[in-house]
Length: 378
Image (cartoon, rainbow, N blue to C red; front, side):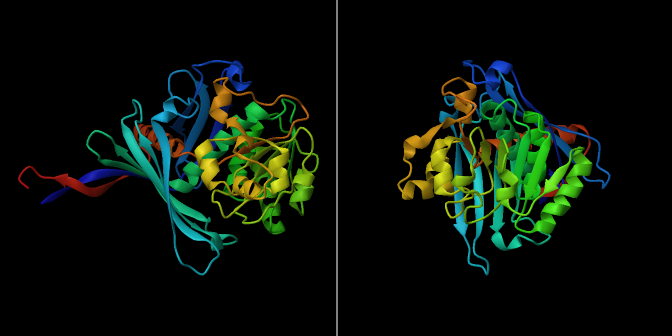
């Protein structure tokens, strides 16, 4: 007879992003072979709606080799499996992301499985739905099931914040958000931490969504957010631009880019979609989270390469390589820089581990009966 083991479930998370950064030298790309990135999290007080509140902080640290250390990543890669499924919408798929190889001293393994339903846009549901599964590595027990939407929103914005600290002009004060969904909320908070943002404009395919976002976030974050009619209006005069859509066609054109801009290109994560056109990619000094992922999965990069505008060498380097001083970041105030974010499975698993530990320690989340254990007499 099977005895139920205990599975920890954390659902309905409310993202709360705090400090991004670390030692000043590492932020500016100064040589420091020990500077690496660490993801930490802590549980906070429940929100007004009773949902769990978890804070994730992405900092530069010296004792945890994962994201920023290219040497450490030789044994720790992100593997991905995408299965396209037939549906009524343009693009529907199921994606599994997981780190493969050694996970250092953390003694956990995990995976994120998400569905992407393009037709969810404009409905009450996010286009991405899924969960992060966390296992202990000694005997393989499933420890936690965590809402993937919130984890992804927090860690993606945190990484964009680090990229902005490294690549945007230090005096960047005008922010453009192209997209008004979940990622827009966390990116607004992250950009305000990374740079002295004083003016914010947001554009969405549906102006009503942009207006609602502006009203809600102006109150929540204590800064005026202006809704505008188009992406062109949003990025005009901006120092930092975040593209946060699931668009299959470019929403930002290269001819719109201005000297000194920094772009975080976040929304598209498949070869079929792109948010910036070929001219925009070609004009920018391009940085990525992982070269291999970009060469195989980035719609922006692949389209520009197919058009003959760039080659593989157009990728200047990875964000982690700037942190350890292997490649240079921004070289002048007039340069246009771009960070193409696809996401790494290690970010999801590291975030899940910390959420599990902190939420469990604070008594939040729920323990539920689950299979996998046997009585001694079985």
